[in-house]
Amino acid sequence: MRKLTIKFYRRNNVVQIAKELLGKILVTRWDGIETSGRIVETEAYKGVIDKASHAYGGRRTERNEIMYAEGGLIYIYLCYGIHHLANVVTHTKDVPHAVLIRALEPVKGIEIMLKRTGKKQPDHSLTKGPGNVSKALGLDTSQSGYSLQSNELFIAEDGFTFSKKEIARSPRIGVEYAEEDALLHYRFYVKGNPFISGKPQ
DNA sequence: GAGTAGATCCTCT
DNA sequence: GAGGATCTACTCA
Image (cartoon, rainbow, N blue to C red; front, side):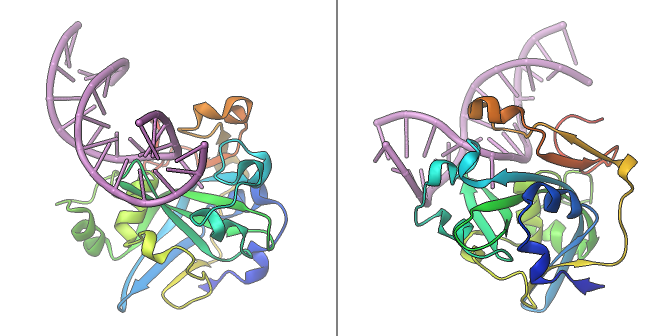
């Protein structure tokens, strides 16, 4: 298993990166406690031209400043006052492209994830949906801006990939307000995987 | 099983 | 002062 290099994140095609992140493993190792999961669902947010993005129209605030940084960082923010959402920042400096991690399949540290989420038994809801992913991996806004090249937080590949047939794409979730951009097929997921969010396939 | 309401707080206008 | 890249529980059938 090896970490994805900074080059992976700094490419200019965020939609392609979102697709390629499927099957990769997101690892956190806070205080030496490792939890990880295989990514099975992502969404691409294409910066200033995407109405669903925080950076639409070049909006730049203290909160989304991290999206304008160079690729290879994580951007975490609070949604609906409850849920922390984790995004992978891509592309180069001043181009606010990002990939939202929507769902994982737990790999390591399932016991820890249960503790963090307050669940008694592992079930499909453990890492289903962006809010749960962050909770299970111990991510919150205080880690926003963290480098994905660090030893505490990174994405790795172990040679496993999903075949083209297993990958489906669809419009994104929860962005109906984004008008025509809500229709863009920027969401990628693994067909039939029990951990993907939204309605069962 | 499907549909709906409520939670809850930070950020931007 | 409003609303959001969501989740869960509860209702009703």
